[in-house]
Image (cartoon, rainbow, N blue to C red; front, side, top):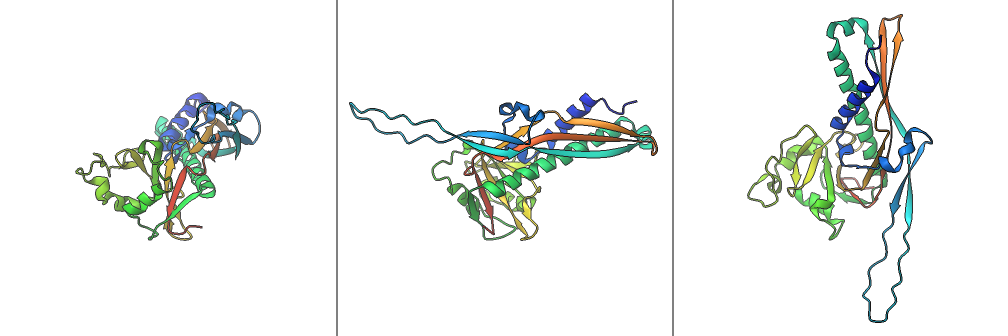
Length: 281
């Protein structure tokens, strides 16, 4: 007799992954442009439309020279994130459905952690903008603002998906007047309160600050890594529903439950992320 109903188990794991994702929440879901991820190949193409030429001022009689639309092909590797657990009959009969719920949470959390870590690696490897900070495990409001300065006048708050910080910086940021004092026009009620999604407040009252320890601390150099991310800069493609399987082991009176998901990540705009850390390579 099956321990779980595959369709329901898959849906539950997906739901848990969506809840557990931190960095994945601010990535652009590009699944619709690569619907064959389940069927073929180990590479995914993220086509990006190149910026057109500058506008010109026309005079009477001038002939407009149109720019040609061009696209840059960004290729990302399709990866499989997978996890498995062994469910013993004695445990299953003692706690029944609650154990399956716990397994769903653990599988979903583990898979979400792998995807978030991969998104950080992609930003570390591909981002152009990097701003040094003075302290490895602290940061100032001025240094965060310097991280925004790399975009010049393209700094509309509504154009940013979020700021990702390591938890070591949470207490520091909570102490910023710019972040918590309500007599500041850009402060927001509720700043400093971590919600279920890991958001501890909003920079300038709009940009979510996400607390995430997944690959945001360099264990070798012992320094925090902070990321300011533009909307649509990070791309992610999902298989959409997790594949789940179970296998009976009669010799140990247990059942193996496994789940896997195909995905691909890509920094679609190398100038869409600003990294702040002490050591800038």
